[in-house]
Length: 447
Image 1 (tube, rainbow, N blue to C red):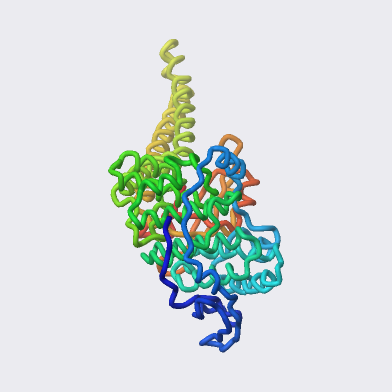
Image 2: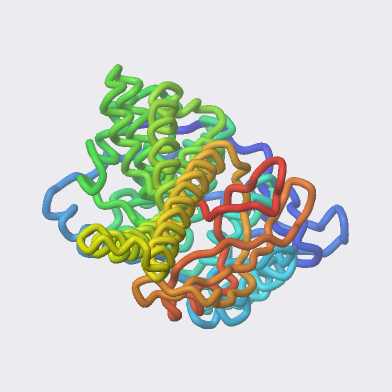
């Protein structure tokens, strides 16, 4: 069991008037915004602060884990109502303030015990927390989580905020603050969202405490040994790998990191916990292997169509060349001009096919270089047009992008084979690309 004793010096909240993060007394009560002077009353937390709290051990009963496993594999999606006001499952670039205004509206309705508004409010904070522009404002993110906790209706809505606040405290190296929020969490809840918040947040604190065995007790020895909600799987994998590295098992730590959906996720999780130096050794091994694999895939993908077309062209040229040469050899008809014309056409097609294959291989090597050395940028798909090429009955599209470049947004494009229904679904979606540092308009999709 662990307890906390230190009371917080202040409590953050989002001003209902100007949406700025503000400080109030930890126990709650009347406050006024220092910027716009909007008055507000923070809910009372005196009873919570007076309770020293304890962190219970995880309940790993097989029957209980089996019940949680039945709830696994259900990705968190915005409700149709929230998608309608956001324009999708994410926040469009430059619309962060609009999203905050939507959150304020949902907050007001949730305070009136509107469960649907509370669900949308909690989901919107989750989406906001994943935006780099919000993640770079920890005071605002903490204030959003604190105010969402205050307004939340369902226990899991509140649990999610406490878990995020605890992990933010761990990331800042604030052990008393993390322990305080964790002590308010519901331990071993029957809902996988509630249970995962407890487990992953406690594992983050155990990592700060250099207690790798407790991390593995909370998260399990490998993925799916203990059910973790999909949105927290990657964080759990990184904490699990770090635990194995702390125990001296570097090969297993590197293997655990292969549970991650893509290499950049490791950097995102590390960014959430700057105080922990996660996977200092195994991370490098994993990233090198992942980059090499990604480069091979990029090379194969970029050169595949050209190689297929070049081989087909070259094969047609070889057949044509043989069609002219073999009969001439048998009959001695090399004096016939038609034979030389046939042989010439065959030779030209063969040379063209070889040139296409060589060019495709060169393009593949360049794509591999770009995947390894290119700038990793965020982009949004804004349009798509058919190129007229079809391979295996799949049309090739040119996807137009709005890229968030190092010097501001710019337009770029890439070509990709895709079925029509996927193209329609891709419109407006955010993707990652690799851009040539010397020619930013040259990009490949980061897959």
